[in-house]
Length: 422
Image (cartoon, rainbow, N blue to C red; front, top):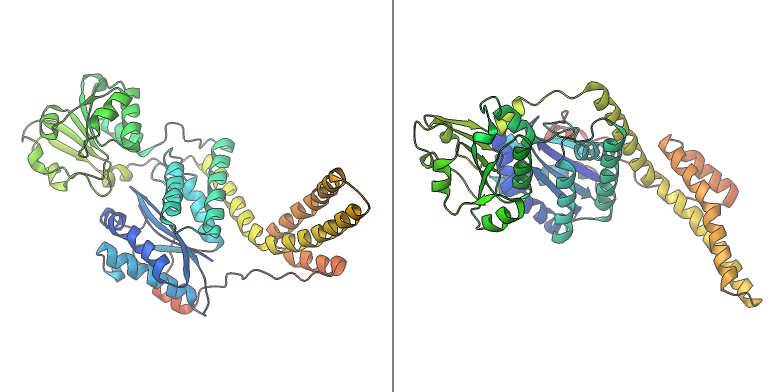
């Protein structure tokens, strides 16, 4: 079964998210290696959320509670967070609720900026990383592929299409109240990753012309050549002449001594873990705009579009759950029909039939199975899978093994991890 443990901008402090982003990914790797009941894990870590999606085998009563507690303790230890503190900062979703949550996250409905551009790519890269680490599972693959499909549907069928929606653009919108003319500003971008590229594009859209980049890892020259920026080899020199400094890297922390007191500089920290020491904001003349400030000013979503998107996410979650419920019935019917077809092919071959007859019979089997398979899924979505099982037994003499259903959490699990809205 699926479990999702989520700490995000709605239920956890930036400090908790920062610590989780550093330590917890290794902990989930260890869970897959060391815990017999954890068969897969995918970790999603962004600047406003940390989520662990776990594929759990539940051999014993209370297995969910054991899985949750093991995951919390492992992540707390790896992130240097007291377990009780982490329990108070994590919400838990299971089964179809975990699917619905991921679908909403991937569609940008749980983001600081609703409908943001970046999140679907971050979810995709989280799955890619799990594949490289060898921690994914067939159920998690199915879950994340359905999440990507749902996100595309939300973007194509609602007005939350992601156009000009991102944390970077929100940060620049807030910064524009302090910047009279972006074309007159010397802007230093610290970092050369995807966020840095998005930041450069967003700055140009606002009219910025004098764009510099510094990379703690030495990649500034290549990044500058690709994106049309000026590469700076010394952070101290670059920061000393910049009007705006934007950090979006995992490789650096900017300290207060980088800025001369009295000189006006706007510093925007988009990194998690923090790229800028909070003490920078106390330097005379320096204004610090960090993630805490940015997310406090996130705009409310458009209610109509948001409601439409939520409805699509709900439908997708129901379909995901129904696919699992319908799977055994469809498999049983396919096996029955295909066995009959194989028998007919053998008889036809014995009478001298060629490849064209075999191909025709296999095509006919596919045609015959198509509509019943669709109808089984429809009935599963409607909660009528029992009718399917009865029909298969009555008409074909087939007994279908039902997949295990998610039972309500035990009292022990609820006491260990009280669930709240994410």
